[in-house]
Picture (cartoon, rainbow, N blue to C red):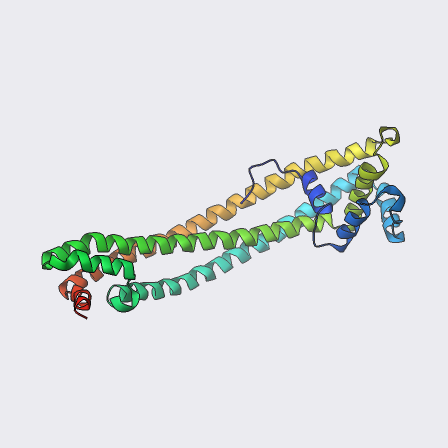
Length: 286
């Protein structure tokens, strides 16, 4: 779920602010920064007021805002995690119903050949079994047929797992992206980011224009530090999601594997005792 490449909040700031994000303010900024300094439109009065307000804020105040946001983040995480568990329970419950339907389809597949068995494979069996007797059919049922049934089961359960992983990943990515955007979109933080990005990309394009960089360095240092905190937090929460997912899913799979093994044994015994291969061989005569 997480990229192995270095990922910093500074990069996140730059990406979100200078790329297409669902924010009218950011899109407006992109258009403005892409123009040169002569054509840059004046900032709205509210933006200027916000910029002046945050300039007067101390580093301690800004750090306190970050810490308060993290506390709120933890509260939101608890609600999200609980909601995810509840939705996962419902997903597995629905998957149980799908499993019952799938088992019925498997039963039909090997007892109603005309409708459910792959035509290419069916033709191959009809050709191979021209000289088979009852013992040959028993051997085939307990070997090749059983292998095919198990393969169908493995394919189905693996696809279920892929779908579950994708569903959980999408939920997690959407939620965590929204959370960090609540921080980046806070008015004072947005104004601060805009201020320094304008400095970097417009006012400081020439070395001779660079001055009073102390606060700018503090801004960058603060973003790099917050980056580490954010990434560590995300990684720790992701471990919880992965561990919970595996435990719950593995328990479900083990239970269904046991039932499937029992069903396979009973089904093959019945298939042999009732000589179900006759339904296939009779097709040769049609």
